View 1 (cartoon, rainbow, N blue to C red):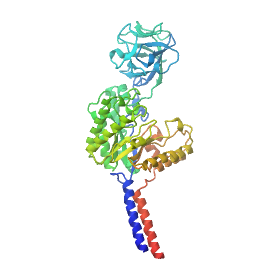
View 2 (cartoon, one colour):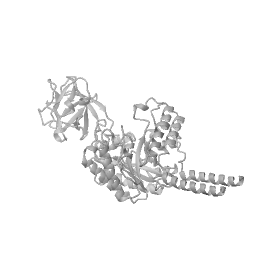
View 3 (cartoon, helix red, strand yellow):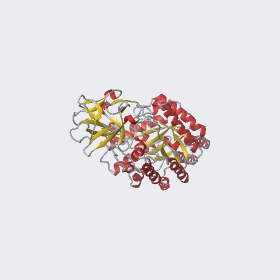
View 4 (tube, helix red, strand yellow):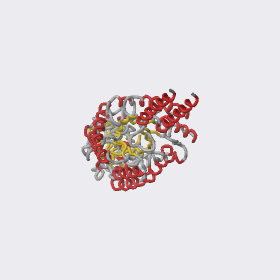
Length: 533
């Protein structure tokens, strides 16, 4: 009788093993049951903070596209103001600057700029003698100004004709100063205060260097930043997947729209070949969409604004890029999945617009592949990831991507080492368990990093923090991917962290091994039971 019971127990556990092995495995991966990945950030989509040297040598490098400036008249001691944020005449009458007094630069050349207001209009002037207004919807020659600088932050602004703008006595900005103004107390002289110069993406690099120089810089970068040796390194450290950010212009690689530079498609092809050689899978991630989905440099935003959700053309172009990528790589043995959009902004991208895009993108990928994973990214900001579980985007090999950082929020500023670790176990783990048990897509921690706001962390502190993250994120039903392989900032650099023992990867739990050991234990118990009885 005992032998019969043991046979039933073994049969039951074998069934459980088959179920667990299927549920906790990602199709197409070898060596591990789930994704243990690394992002190739800063390679095919530029982020200046990852490799600042890419921007070396740009003339007026602190006046790239999107730089926010304010102009203060040295004679009136008042700020230039686009009333109501745009749509009216420009005055020089504000004592304290705010958003109406803040201008975003659109760079035309080293010295030529178009000036955009907080509501999106451009400063415009019809010619000599005009009063400047902020009424142009799109810029052309009448919205282009030359900015001359000296070494102490003062500037002159002039038209193509050579006439300078000045602050008139009745607080207007007019184009009627003739001659050459001096740099002291002169109505045509302004202090230029740079408020923010934090956009260093593909647009800023290409437009700042100019096409020929940018092509040279990016070719060298793409050929050297990520190489076949990096894939060998990842393989040796148990990494089985890479998430590769790409920009929308990759679909027009031989002749991309200005100012973007071709060549990223060849680099992506190389990555797939290297991945195949080392049994590593690729997730292609549309990181930068037309018009920008979040206003950040990694979405190739020109000036920090988010235009993607406001234009059907931008969304349609994005779907065309997904079509291009799916048709090109769907049959490649190294493809694991395609991520339809990275980090759409919760503040700017309505959920219904995003879900509609995701559903259409899912169908495009399915047209080319029945097995490739379709990854949809959670909105960043104030958004609940459950909103994507309730959206019914697709039914086969669907993944929701969450990005977990103990950064970028004042909530984390004063946390100690133990506070951060406790947050991982109490908050992150609880959310993962809830999502894992939901009837819907798999869970992917597509970006995380072994960095925090703890300024005095020791190596042991970093090891403990990394261990906590790995322990929790290993439970994600699809897996995780570290941000990023290489980085100018050491603790963001996966290679540096692993080589210097700040991040201890250990081994990924394999459900097949775990259930196999369980079966072995039950079998041993059955044998022991028979012996005793």
